Length: 395
Ligand code: NAI
Ligand code: MG
Image (cartoon, rainbow, N blue to C red; front, side, top):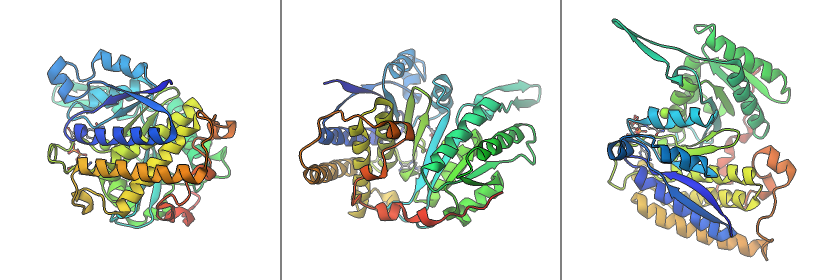
């Protein structure tokens, strides 16, 4: 049986604690749906720099290139040389950062379910920085092409959600760069009449995410603003330990938690692994579409449902008020995956032949249709609680 090849970078700090939890979750879900995965461990980050003199060794880049997808733990001070480089090298232009309230987590505001769609390849993170005598200069690069493709991505995502986009920029001050981004975003908006939108300056958006987070469905923004707002949004829904992300290009995608290497808690079993587990779930969903294999989408849903069920049972690390160590959460989550997987298999009766192809409408649509989302999908009520809220003010 052919195996899906996953490039794995455990990274630094809490990375080696949280990534194995995600890998075993994927393995258990793969067992349930009868496909196999091959994990290829690759070096990256501060530890790679110390060991082989490169934060992003050439073998790692080649290993990713020859894999079907990549899962990355956080790296430390070498983040710029690892993740920012990988995003540009593989043109992973769409950074998806869902911020959603899960049961058992104490959020600032209940029912929040928003998706930050962040341009991931340019802006100040292009890295064009220069030193002058007594000064330093960074170039903010914004192109029409990159702005258009991320705006298209955001509006397409909104069509699958609650059909509202908030375009976030600061064009009143950054008139040329953010001006270009907002103009292109408005043009794209006009070609998606079924999706309402509003515009917000980034400072006002930072306030609105705390004050009125239920008014957000999809938030479309630029690279630096998206980086900052996604940590803020994560805190609104319960903390960085619950914030997964995807970096998506046309032919490759890399998945990682939003958080960093958390050196303050590393090595003590305190790290919440769910952000990485949920990133792995997003990875299986993307792979399902890229490979046309429905089992992967089922496995993705199973993992998310198991996280919800585990949280309901109080299986959590101290950041969520739980009493379990990282690896204990991992073991218990595996058991929940096996348990829910068994229930699903017995409910669905004899299994369809493996490798059921994803139909064309699913393949293009991004994600399995609603009828494949497991029923009873633990916590769907909560996860979807924000769905009735439009907050759709046209701007
Ligand atoms: P951080 O995200 O590592 O930590 C911020 C706070 O959140 C800390 O108090 C930490 O203990 C807590 N936290 C983070 N993840 C957690 C988890 N899974 N469970 C429980 N608590 C968690 O941000 P910080 O401290 O600014 O950065 C630390 C290092 O991470 C830096 O060297 C930075 O460059 C790197 N970094 C790497 C990223 C990447 O690989 N994509 C992203 C962000 C930061
Ligand atoms: Mg960040």
